[in-house]
Length: 124
Image 1 (tube, helix red, strand yellow):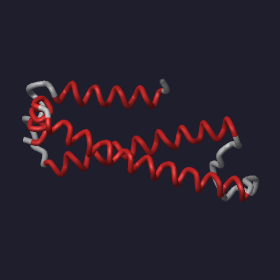
Image 2 (tube, one colour; image 1 turned 120 degrees about the vertical axis):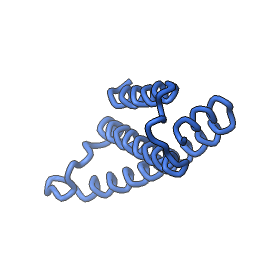
Image 3 (cartoon, rainbow, N blue to C red; image 1 turned 180 degrees about the vertical axis):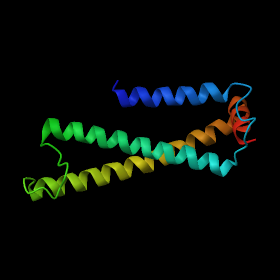
Image 4 (cartoon, one colour; image 1 turned 90 degrees about the vertical axis):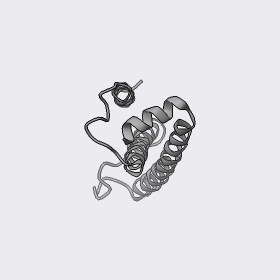
């Protein structure tokens, strides 16, 4: 696993660990819409970042070094356009998938007793 993946797993573990403690959620309440905004946005951002890093690694390995600055005179038009199109499409698709997966996970959590209890602690 890369360092980014470990950080994501640690953050998720800390959130779940603290959410299950009896003190969690007592000091502040959160509306369901706010909870969804936080979960959906963070999932979309994390999936976009992970996809961009994977695309950079793949491009370096198989094609060319991704341009850091497309305005640089050393970057060829072909490389700049390919990188822009590929990263734009990949990150866009990953963000949409992240939103959909977060929505699915939240719906699934609301169907289980433990999930409803956890969400009620966060939302109340």
